[in-house]
Length: 544
Image (cartoon, rainbow, N blue to C red; front, top):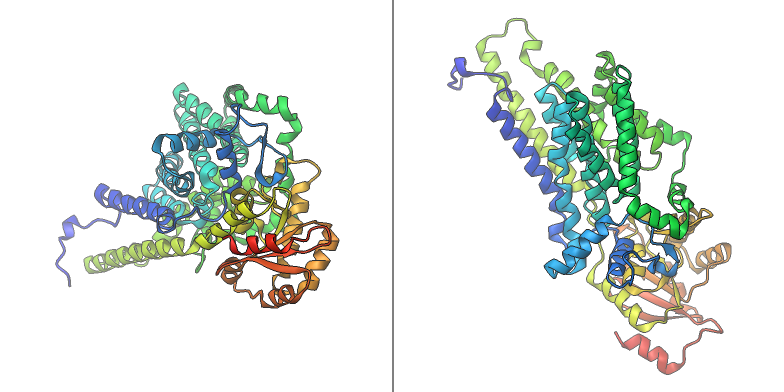
């Protein structure tokens, strides 16, 4: 038996030093899984092309805010909350660093702040230190807590999520201590969220309503405090939204909700517990479900109600926004369900000292294994896809060798527009129109976003088909285009083959190859009114 001082033997994670060391490990490893991917690449992960264009336009406009963005030549109102755009514009000028490099690192670095803010918030919610620790562990390593923040478009999401947690921290502190300085924190945090990200502003709004409303069941005056926060934040942020209303009208703020779609399946999502996006075992999902049952049994309804409200009000992005209440449920399941079950005292009425020592060692091994497992799983869960140098080269070539009025279709095989990084970055880097890129269209009327998303989805089906599929798609959606931009890299990443379509295009007299490298091939459609003369074609083929 190992020599152990039995008088000093106490439970794992019960001493301040053990607790602090464990918490520190969770925070450091949580930061690693957020930063690790972006430091190994030289371009922003996944999306961000729309925001790149909008930040660029801040320095080019003769107004503080442009009226429209030039992105994809779609006459999209410049109505997106601009706070982060100004921050990145200032950083670019101060640091003299490429905007693309800032967009690569800024979201991941800012997202690291969410971990200590979540810890402080949970510390106010739960009475168990072990519950707080494991809630923080869950939040640090659940892919849905960070994979949408560290990508290029995270330049707005990451700071907005930080501001949201700041507001929620202020709210729970005010509800417990009734100090008006905390109410000021809520107001400032919520104002900054409004000025940064519309989706997270909506999440913060109804989350504050849940927190204040739950407290108001016993003291109605808290509804007045909630009202004061909403009115004050609305007035403080009016310097931005009044400008947008004057330019584009009130409806421009309603259009983005066109992207939401309610269905019976979306309402069933919280009951399936398949929304955590864990790549291997759904450990957090199972323990979170246990925590939900334990919370109901103990009549602690606040977090379960908040969790359910997220799924009722966020049919499309519920997995993302539910991560805060769900992580707390995971901590509850760990502290009040899993750990008591594996403690030796729970298995035998009077365990001897040797049993206690051995079981304490097993508990340590379990926690260390769990920490290593969730770190590995969280890191592998992130799909670190981004534009290659060859893809960037092809888009820059397009900018130099095509006219402004020429349009493109982008074939990548990625049917989900949110993951189709090549389609989103193409208009930003080439300055040319992609006839199926939906990003930004949510700010336009008549459900144009949804129509474009459907056209994009159906177009990508043609990657593994022949030319007839492309012709049928063109006829059905009535899309005019002069070029076909095929991202071979994206298609390879999806495990698809485009050989059949390439053979048809290369052998068809109406199409000619004008650019090709390892990752991209561009075809030009020689329609009767759009035929290049021989010298111009040679220029386009060989200028790159």
